[in-house]
Image (cartoon, rainbow, N blue to C red; front, side, top):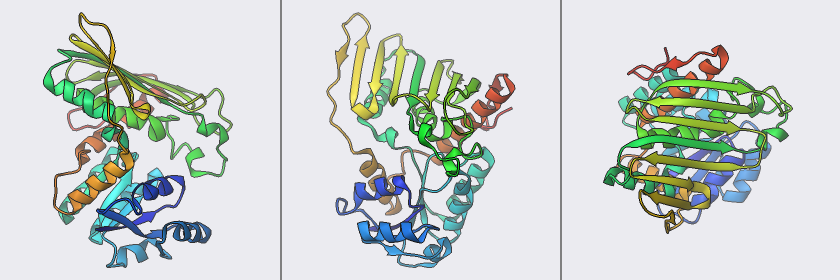
Amino acid sequence: MLRAAAIGLGWWADELTQAVQGKSEKIRVTACYSRAAENRERFCQRFGAESHESYQAVLDDKKIDAVLLCTPHSQHGEQVEAAARAGKHVFVEKPFTLTQESGQQAAALCAEAGRVLAVGQNRRFAATTQEIKRLLQAGDFGTPLHCEANFSNPRPLTYSPDGWRAKRTESPGGGIAGMGVHMIDAMVHFLGPVTRVQAQAKRLAVPVDLDDTTSALFEFASGATGYLGTITACPQTVFYNLYGTGANAFAEPDANRLKLHRAGQDPAEVALTPIDTLLAELEEFADACAGGPAFRVRPEEAIHTVAVMQAMVASAESGAAITINDAGSAA
């Protein structure tokens, strides 16, 4: 049983913990830390965890095997490095970091320490994602041509100016880091590395100083193209559609819906078994920590996703297309 500590006790730490607590024989959240004492008390009462007074106290606790980082994006790099130095495995929520350089440094330190590094891209575990990937590998799409994706929700309409998510330093490009990163991961998972980005970002409706309408055109190393939209002021929408010479797929991962349109046939719904993506990703993390198969979101993929995020922000700010070189950095 992997003994994990939840760090940063907002709503998402609750979501992760309730996905496994009392349900998994592979991982249990046994400890927690937040700067706010009231959050620690609430979390401990709800989940039966032990409270710690500092992050360092968590890292010093030999009864803890791993940390689950649900903290502000800008803190991830340093917290991952500190955990690796302390000999802890790391599960860090997306985005991995906000810069490619900090991501590379943190990943290298985990590798040197022999610690597992897992980035929480839970939609990689969705039944729709897995089925599309299977069909791609089987050649059912023929030549993959294009992917379009959208992840939008209205949560930023209610952000307090004092909240960390309401700061441009934590949420560059509006919804890219909070929502669009899921779709970037899916598109790269399907089509491979992104080589060029042209993006725009505008603020039209949210009350805090964040962009709320962000979109980008992608070119992939394979020659395929893509489009990503993320809007932080409209009803929730989550989809990705993949187009190829042999078939088109229309997926809503959160609704567990996939429609496949094969060349020469009528579109048809694909029967899928629902997957608890949070339970699945945390148990796969626990398996990797126990010496099992590697976590499916590889560190180099998470770093590339960060490079794509950076390129989107740079393109939106400059109005110019940004090239991502072979090393993953924007130029």
